[in-house]
Amino acid sequence: MDKLLEFIRSIYVVVVFILLEVAALSYYARSNAYTQARLLTRSNQVVGGVQGLFTSVRTFWQLGAENRRLTEQIIALEEELTAYREAEAEGRLRLLADTMRRLPYYYSTARVTTSSINRTRNFVTIDRGSKMGVETGMALLAANGAMVGHIVSVSKNYAVALTILNPQFQASGKLSHNPDYYGSIRWEGGDYRYVTMDELSKYADIHVGDKVISTGFSDYFPADIPIGEVESFQLNETGTYYTVRVRLAADMSSLSNVILARNPNSPELKGLEAKLKKRYQ
Image 1 (cartoon, one colour):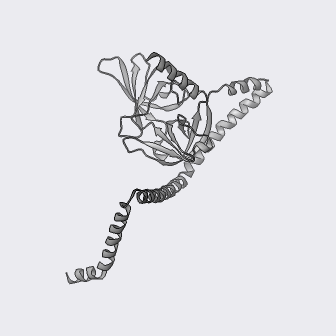
Image 2 (cartoon, one colour):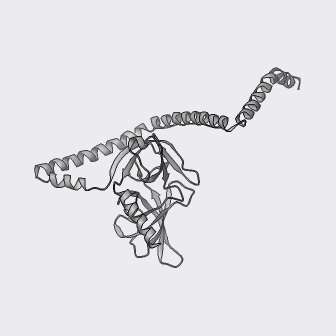
Image 3 (cartoon, helix red, strand yellow):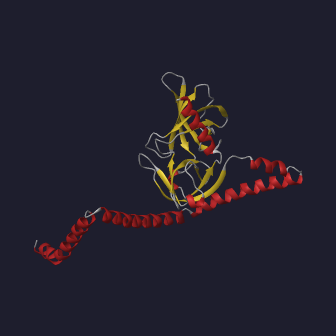
């Protein structure tokens, strides 16, 4: 007991000093709105720096997997290049070029700075903003081309995407081998590796392991973007449609390099839809 009292006596000056500093800072922080704004800005800078450090460390440990993915993409590109060379030799290159010009989506890349998977509503922040041509409504894909989310907010140098792990996310999916039937994609919370596809017709030929891809009905996503594969399925109580458990193709826990897809016709389409809604409501 004497040693404890002696220890407290030796450090009480430091403890009192720390408590007084905390009280002073707390009083200072509540003094006026300007002070609160300055402290909030400083704290955000500190938090951003720490998050950037952790992102750098995480990226370093993921270099092996990134290199493997890059190697696979290089192989795929080499195969495409071989096909273009063959087309050029056969005089079909002009036809291929005309086809490429008609493709409705433009693609670019970005790096994830922060992301979440264990919240009720999950988002991803990337290091590209309006200065780099990023706009709201652009699709966000994983490095393997799988569906991740879409951009909902843009600043000069950064952008935030609402991810598939968010109840507000909306998309539709179909079976790759049976595209005549489709359902709506939603996340029910809980496990970040799975989503649900609802309202898939009972006439759909479905099996465990089937690939689920995007329909192209969305304003955000091109058709045939990988979503995941069928983990399990069951008919609803009335026996009219399937509820499907889908294992995501994108690893939402380790997003690093991502792909942005922009439909240049999206503003025109949205403007037309807005006019129609206004006219017929």
